[in-house]
Length: 350
Ligand code: NAD
Image (cartoon, rainbow, N blue to C red; front, side, top):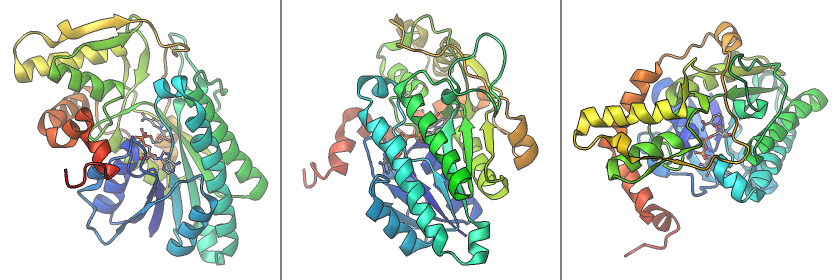
């Protein structure tokens, strides 16, 4: 079996590629444009595996996408490529609209043309899994959970662009019979997470003694899922899910942001001692349009995909802090800005 993974050099995509190739022995063609958020070092554990192929390409490029399908003839697609950072989407939404909406539309058209050329057997088994977020549902009050039928009500340019892409996938499934499914997942955390997102940013700022900035009063609640649990769920959704369906994926691990920050500080206090890391916490003006609470009901995914989150937040966050303490080789080049220059070839020979 060969799966085409888009965005496989990002945080979740690289975990998925490591899971597919390293743990399941499934072939992967990783199509990634290598934006600032990509890091090929996250794929080092599988980079030399004959099951793994990397193609640098933009999902917005129809010629490149057609070529990828022609050359590699995948049995399925797991589509993760996206601009993913809410704060960046507030500052400059253009790239989000381009990649998340137009890129998804371009990919759907490439899949439609590819499908038409497939033989009956391969066509019957082919699936397209679109990886989306619970942020498309907007905010919850203090109680209740997001279900698959929850109304779409996105608040940020990021979540609006992801909502638009979900609608496109549904339209291509209903109109053209594309065998497409959608997964809507809660916030992920774990190793190889780009340090602009809350958890890695807090860990690294705490390690370096830099201010830990918390939006508003820190009461916003997110439902955390370890990225390796998400990777397992994605393969199960591709292989066991039904076209036309969507699956909410979450770990039943609701935490207020301030609680998450305090847990990280407490773990670092244990590991390193010294001044309490929580002294670095500063409260800053809230993010505009900041959703108050996300929480997922994963009952359908558990029942229909045979999946369950294995990692509790308390053990997962300890493992994650320890990973960042051990893997300075991965994050120091990013924090210092060296990595971007190297990838662009600017520091070659320097
Ligand atoms: P990420 O930002 O770490 O990675 C995105 C990857 O997509 C990068 O490698 C980037 O180079 C690539 N990419 C961006 N634009 C591209 C383009 N035009 N063509 C080809 N590749 C392109 O993101 P992530 O956190 O790994 O999220 C992956 C997916 O999962 C996204 O679709 C996101 O919406 C969704 N998701 C993320 C979370 C989360 O907590 N991170 C939760 C639910 C859903």
